[in-house]
Length: 541
Image (cartoon, rainbow, N blue to C red; front, side, top):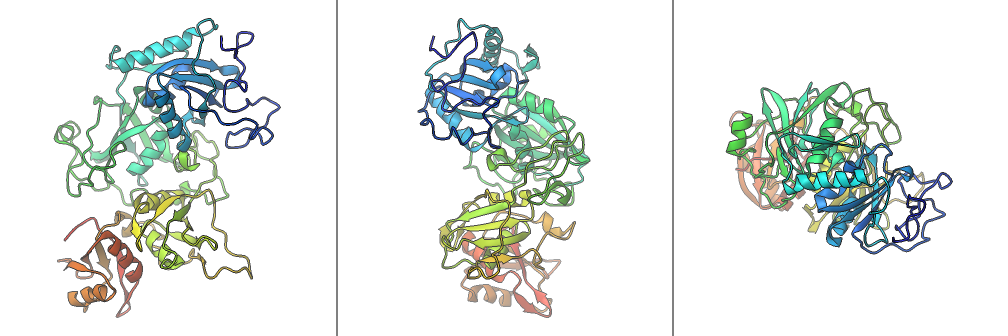
């Protein structure tokens, strides 16, 4: 024995994991780390193929713990310490364990909707041959390995393990959203379903006037747990009901990464504007048209105001509702199910690597306002290449982050992440600020404050082609081209809409130019009581 068992059940000690165990006399902080009294008592462990899992809910079965490791490689042994809410997982290789720890460091895993915490153990292997109650763990391991080695039929059979079901189904789920009162986007589905495992691919489409999706997990067990937990639940209070079933498909073929389909393992895929989302064989199976417009009024990715408490407040979800939807666990949010009170929603973004010589709070307000209503902007006083931006809610924050992270602005590639701050604080009276903090909560330039606005339907990633609107009838194409050219931008093409000369498309020399042009010329006074409206277009000229 390795010396980490006593009296039949192994205590977790300094020799077995990177942290001290928690007991009834050892309070823990809200994020699952040990009490401050123990902080720094022991140096961090080096990589090991044995991993220590903390805060495991007592009702969790062996198969569910094993499922944490399956996306990263073969799980070779398992030790459950149910009395201590802990477990040890042994991976087949140290490389698999390193990949697993690295992934879960940024995306906290959830089991039975509760966060668990994973770190390296000091042990190099688990020796459990002579331990009692290891029969269930070995049976679970054999069942999981049988599925992944192809020895178990994928026809829908399942094996009961300690009260849990070891799925033999496909890793692909078919999702139907009924009572679609508010928009549900690909990003929203990813937020919800990633709580139950690693989501590899998602394809959304409509069939029979219903919003549907196909979602592929890394592991059939993840799909099983998601189906059991989410079928019949509401995304928002009283509406957007999920119907979840196993698909007959065992894998999805995603050709394009855009707002209708996404392969999270292939960031190099083209956006495929104007191309079918589903390949021909899947179109035949599901009857989905190629490019599908949203079957609801509203914006992909925008949630109803009722679903999002403002920072510092909490709301009680109705029974049967997922409650106010939050951002992914890697961004400190938590999905709330069956009336649990959610944690505080974070709607503040941290923007870094800005050009401090060129950027201002107003310019950030205009740019990020393309994806949501910006309430406050603060450029950091002592680090002016960084800024905090408070959006109206967490979904708008994530939408802005997904579209603007990695874009080039004033010669610098900006980085956009969710901030740990819950609000952007305004400077105290008399405090030196140099105009770096601005409150835009009452701005008339908010694009999304009016319910049902057409702006909800026209949210696209930055592109070299801009959509212009609110153009006076007397304005000519030469005037608008000169306006952009005189501001320093390269105009490659321009055209008015045939049926409505209040709108036009203008193509500039690059995406970076278009971003800067939008910042500078959005709300430009064109005369005749008209101010130019500028947004990104999905079309090209």
